[in-house]
Length: 287
Image (cartoon, rainbow, N blue to C red; front, side):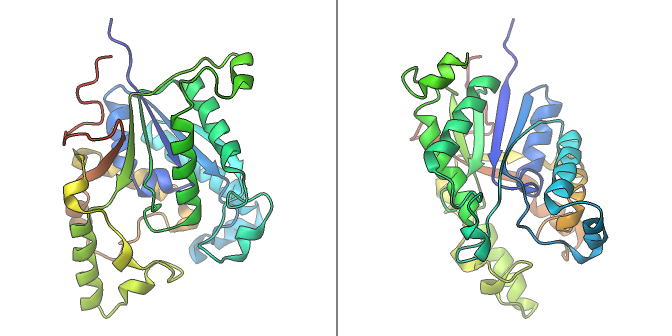
């Protein structure tokens, strides 16, 4: 009997699982894959969408974002895991000095947590942020570095021997992918912003994202995953994150235009290296 496929997404913040690869997670969950989502931080340092600010009277931002995250994972069909490091801001933000922040956390400690989870879930495929964090957010970059460090130790019985003593047997996933955006898509989006009179170097709710620095060369992408049938689920999951606006960064675009631009999710295969292009994260795996 064929083993059930397992997929683990490891992301920095509540909402990263939905606003980014939400359609990918929904696709595989509905195809019978055992999908897990790990969120490394608690979201406590985020900002409130003004339309959801009334919720702040009843709970902390971390509590609200946990409920939103649970809602999103139910919609996606994923099992949720959360580490609870305090999240950080963009480079230079005061929140980065908080002693409990992911920014201040020891990289090996974060990698240790990831190895424990991987040995528990035993995924065949892992997806996470790329080395730039997508838009150079320090938490995204820290998660990428921690996953890279953890990768070499997941299947090593001599690494983190305390985990072995606790019953966490070594497990080596078959593949590691980075979620990416093609540079061609970024250039297209920049043109639209400039036509609207907006500065692409001051993008985002806080104006702290420079789109001109973003994107991966199209010829470096290994997987172009068709996800159009699952965009409704992605939207449902994204809407759970009401405190963060309930959607992606291009909500002002016509809905039909958004959906056309999101028909595919894109991935770079980080491990094993030197991959050839393929159309599925599990393509060619003998499970």
